[in-house]
Image 1 (spheres, rainbow, N blue to C red):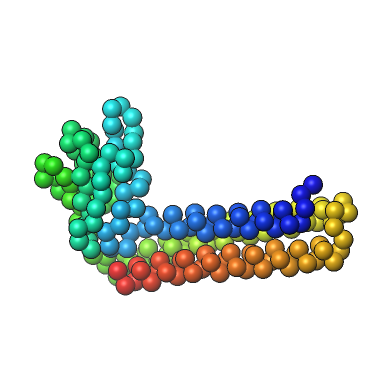
Image 2: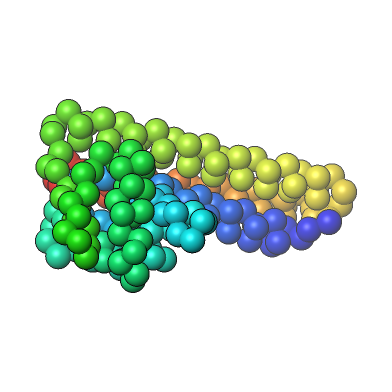
Length: 187
């Protein structure tokens, strides 16, 4: 049986992972500014295998609303272009023969509001994940208390610590989401 400290540390790590996952998910929500992470989901057919775009090309940001994709091997340029069209990013690649430019359009007010709703939905999913971690930790603590691994005082102390970690985890998620919402509304 795990000790109270192990249960607490495990819960803390899982809650931190929820914050990391939320950040990765929100990075894919376009804020009207060039960001190389927009292309994280793009896979290019390279020697018969779907390969992440960032492994076959360098991605730079020459201007605030522009991405420049320069393949390491020019023979893959057309495959990159096809992959961008297929990715449903809503961006039109401009192929100049040696690189591809992606111009990021300005977001409309309505689109910004839709994206903020998406951020709130992702935030709720992350909060549910943190609460599930809390529930699992509490169940483990109850089992440990029932089995005599720790007494009632230790149990209540650990319960408070798990709740404090949960509160901190949710506060962290809200800060991440709030920063993304601000970026979307200003972008």
